[in-house]
Image (cartoon, rainbow, N blue to C red; front, side, top):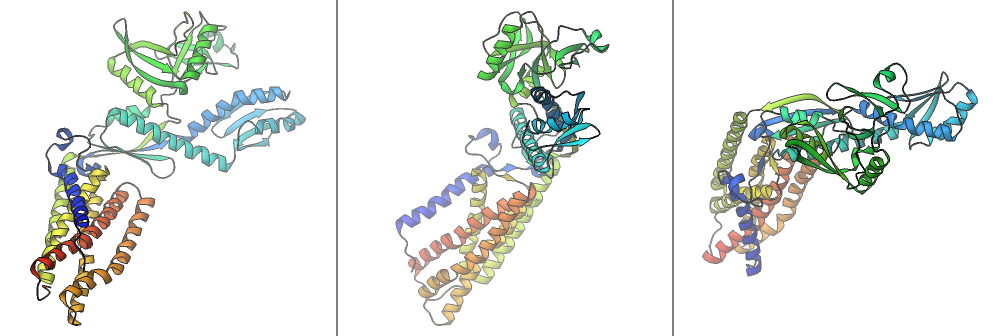
Length: 514
C-alpha cells in the first residue's frame, strides 16, 4: 500500500501551507496598502472593482501617409542619382506619386524608385509613377504599427499609475484598454490622444512667412503653426529625430516649470553638430506638427541634453515629460468606444459570485457526505484546500480575476470531486469482488489514475485553446479553469490519498465506510 515516507509527507504539507500562505491576503482588509508587494491578493478585473474601458483604433492611413512622406526625400535623391528629371512629387496614404513627362525617363526611374525600400512596387498611370507597398509588406507594416502602438500605450498607462491595466489588440488595428479603479478616464484619454512625435528642425531664415505664402518657398521647407498661433518656415527634414530621446523630466528655469530632455549618443552627436554649425539660427522644437518652442542657438550644445521652456505649469510639464519618456505613437489613436463600470456594480458582481460559490460548495459537500460518508468528509476537506490553493496560485502569478474567472472557480469546485468519485466507486467494486480494505484502497487509487488523467487532460486542452484564441474575460476563465484543474488533481489524488492512508494506518478498520 501507499507508503507514508517522511519526505513525501513534508513535500505535500509544504505545498499546502505555501498555497494557504499566499491565499491569506485575499481575506485581509486593505491588503494592497498594508502588506508587502510580494504578498498581495488576487487582482480584480474591471467587472469586479469597477473602472473604465476604452476601445482605440490605430489610424493606419495617417501612419502610411507619414511613411510615404518620409520617402519623398529618398525619391528625390534616387532620381538625382539616376539623372532623371521630374516635374512633381506628392504623397498620400495611397502611395507616392512622381510625375515624369518623358516615357524613357519614366522607365529609367522605375528600378531606383523600387529599391528605396523593401516591398515597394511601381506602377504607371497617365505619365505618373505611383509607388506603393505590395500586400505582404503592407500587412507587415500595419501589424508592426499596432504592436508599437500597444507598447507605447502600455508605457504611458504604466507611468500614469493605473493599477493592473489590461492592454491588448482586439480585431484588426484596434486596441482594448481596461483601467480597473479609474471611474473618470478623461485624463487617460488626453494622454492617449496625443501622438507625442517630437522632432527638431532648423528655421528657414532665407524667407519669411509672408514671402513663403506668396510662393517663395523652397521644396525643402514648409510652413507650420506654433502653439501660440504664430507661424514658422522650417526645414522639412528634421535636424534631430525624437526617437533619439532617452529621458525627460520636469525642471525649473527662473522659477517657471520647464521640460528637460536627454539624448542617446547618436542624438547627442547630431544635436551637437547642428547647434555648432548653426549658431545664431533658430531651432524649432516640433511636437505633433506644432512648434512648441523656437529658441535661438547661442552656442554649441554638446552635453546631449537640453531644456524646453514655455508657459508650462508643473502638471503640463509633467505630462509632456511623461509623453516624451514613453515615446511617440507611430500613428494617431481614435477612441471608438468608451464604457465605465461603477464600483457598486463591481461589488454586486463579487457578492453574486461569492454567493454562487458558497451554494455550489454546499451542494458538493452535501452530495459527498450522503454518497460516501467518512470518505466524503475527507474529500470535502480537500475541496476547501483546493480553493485556497487556487487563490494562492492566482495571487503568486499576479493573475486578474474577472467575473468569468469566478465562473471558472465555481466550475472547478464541482470538477474537483470527479477524481474522488472515480476512485471511491472503484474501491466499492473491489470490496464487492472480495478484496481486503487495504487492497481495495490501493487498487482504487492505482487503476483510476489513467481515467482521471484522460478526463482532466481533455479539459486542460480546452482551457489552453480558450486562452490562446480568446481575449479578455475568456482568457480569465481559461486561466482559472486551468489552475483549478491542476490544483484539484493535487488535492483530490495526492492529499486525499494521504488522509485516507493516515486514517487506515491509525484505525485499521474492518469495513470500508463508503
